[in-house]
Amino acid sequence: MPMTSTCTYGFCPLDPDNLDDLGAEVEMDFGTELGKHIVTSTASFYVPKGLIHGPFMFRKVTKPILFVHSMMAPKYYKKEVFK
Image (cartoon, rainbow, N blue to C red; front, side, top):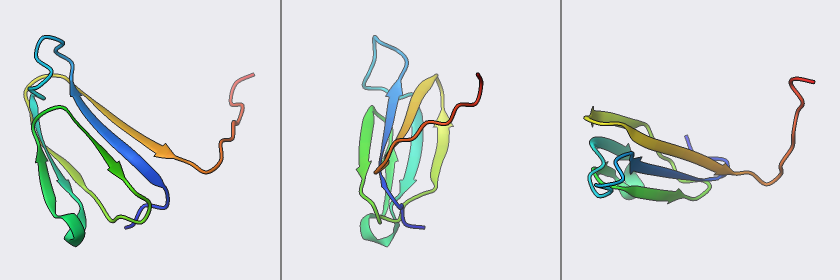
């Protein structure tokens, strides 16, 4: 399914002495337009609105990693949950 807004994805190891070795193998599928990609080192991806992508498959994880997903929304709103 195409994204309805722009987003970014980031992968980073939590070992400050070895930031090049992700400690994981993540397969990312960007559809017929860009194909599949394997991530094994620190990386970030910009995914424009409308690009079909996913799923992301964590094929191997040998140490803790940080995975970040953010979406650029056209409008910000806040809903109070606790008062």
